[in-house]
Length: 253
Ligand SMILES: Nc1ncnc2c1ncn2[C@@H]1O[C@H](COP(=O)(O)OP(=O)(O)OP(=O)(O)O)[C@@H](O)[C@H]1O
Ligand SMILES: [Mg+2]
Image 1: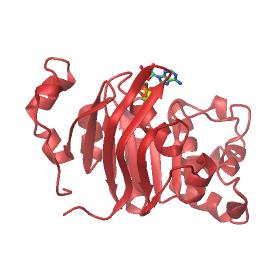
Image 2 (image 1 turned 135 degrees about the horizontal axis):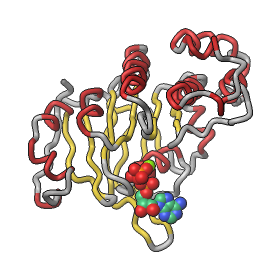
Image 3 (image 1 turned 180 degrees about the horizontal axis):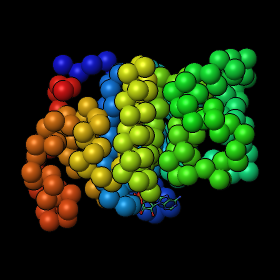
Image 4 (image 1 turned 90 degrees about the horizontal axis):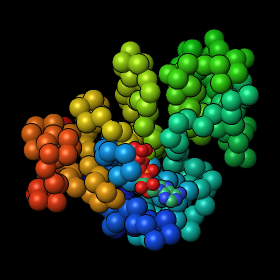
C-alpha cells in the first residue's frame, strides 16, 4: 500500500524552446519519506524540481497536499509548505549567515516567527550560530550547503526539495549533510532530492526514480533498486534502460 501522497507529479512535460527536457514524467512522494531522483548530467533532474516549484513552465499535473499547483506562483508554493534549495546553493555571498537565514522567512506570514525559526535551524546546525556574522562567500562548500538547507527550513516546510545537496563536497561533509537530511526527515519533513551518485542516494532514501534523457527509466523502493544489478549497468551506460522492465515499488522499506 502507498502511504498518503504529499506530492504527486503526473505526466509532467517541460520544453525549452524546441527542446524536450522532460517527457511525461510521473513521480509520487509519500508523506514522511525521503525520495531521490537520479540521473546523469542533463537528464532533467533540476528541470523536474524547477517545474515542481514553478520556476520552469510545464504541462501535466502537480498536486501538493491534495491541491493542484497549476497557476500557483513560486512564492505561494513556498507559503503552502514546499521549499526548494536550488542547484549550487545560491546564497547571497556578501550577506552574513544570519541575513541569509532571515531571507528564508521573507513571506509576511513567516516574519513574526523569524526568531523562533532561527533558533530551530541553529539547533539543527550549531555551526550556523557560531558563524552567524560571517559573510556567506567565505564559508566552505559544506557550510554553505548547511546555510542553504537551513534557509529553506526557515519557512517551516512540509516538503523540502534539494538539488544535488552533495555536489562538490568532501566524503566527510557528504556524511554530515546526509545526517542532516535524516534529522530533518525524522523531524517530520518529507524530502525530495536529486543526485548523480546511485549508491549513497539510495541508501539515504525510501524510494528512487531514475531519469534518462528526460524520461523516467526505472523506479522502485530503494531496497529494490539497490538489489537490481541491471540498474547499475544501465546507469553506467552499458545498457539502454528502454529495454528494461520498470520496477514498481509498492512498499517503503
Ligand atoms: N533554461 C534552459 N533553457 C534551455 N535548455 C535548458 C534550460 N535548462 C535546462 N536546459 C536543458 O535541459 C536539459 C536538462 O537539464 P537539467 O538542468 O534539468 O539537467 P540535470 O539532470 O539537472 O543536469 P546536471 O546533473 O548537470 O545538473 C539539458 O539538456 C539542459 O541543457
Ligand atoms: Mg541539475
